[in-house]
Image (cartoon, rainbow, N blue to C red; front, side):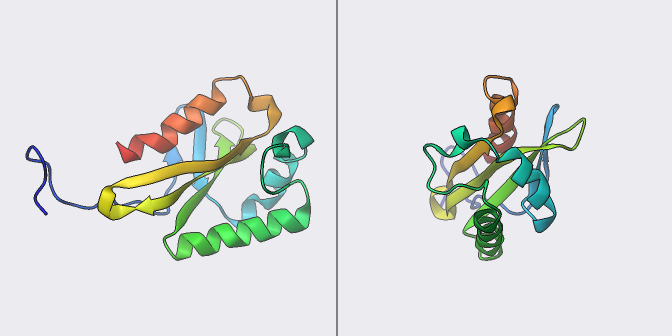
Length: 134
């Protein structure tokens, strides 16, 4: 298929990578993030509108394993969101519903510890994950 307006006809390529912004770093989700995620996930307010409650260690473990399996199959690319200066885990986000032929992707399953809510952390995380898609 020819590109429009001289654009190449290459397909969008996403994959496991570290995305770095000025304040935050998004790392591919790994088991090594478990303790930080568990600490970040302890507020019940996070899970009021989510389909899982990751403050429970067994649910968090299953979620991490499922996320890594989805990444291996190219279905999703989950990230742990870390504060750049301290390395503290603040939450998670991911690319999902990847549609290479349409050059489309969703950003979702995003959650943060309440200390990040209403700060520049949330929009900075979204800018960091969106930038490679543009």
